[in-house]
Image 1 (cartoon, rainbow, N blue to C red):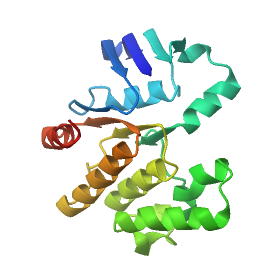
Image 2 (tube, rainbow, N blue to C red):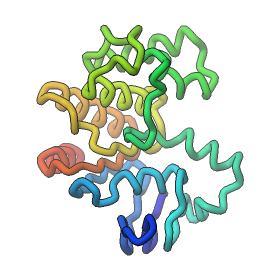
Image 3 (cartoon, rainbow, N blue to C red):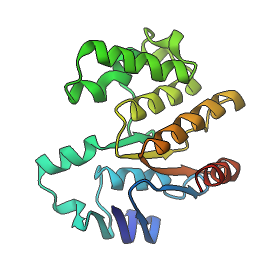
Image 4 (cartoon, one colour):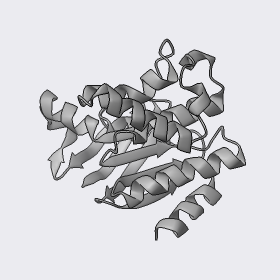
Length: 207
């Protein structure tokens, strides 16, 4: 279980988050809406401990995230898949290499990696982009590649920050289907979006 307790985050005099409290329980699907600049990406960075809160605490199974030893923090991060500009693609790598990276660090054998990467790219209509370098991708294809990378290792927790922002209607449908499949397999999903229709669809499908 991951919990934010009275969390605030400020950059200088600019407060992005104020007194945020919520709990993300195992196998839950939560959709949170917020306008651009409301702090959604800051939540991703706090959950990955890329940054610490200005006030309040982020806890994992009751343990403060800020107090986790480095080796346990690394294990925790491997269990969290993130779709966010805060976790960018490596531009000099191909799509296939970017998507496969979570499997590489888990020691998955090459043949199994290739199959899982191929499968997830196909589900997202991205199979033709596998050999392309990431810096040649359109915004939509970058978004889908980040989604593929986040789900390929079947993480315990998936944090999706604006996963449909640059997508066409059909691409959005494929992306949301992949998120829902991950949830059905037991992944905890936190969806952060400005689009209330996306949030409502997710909530209706997973209630």
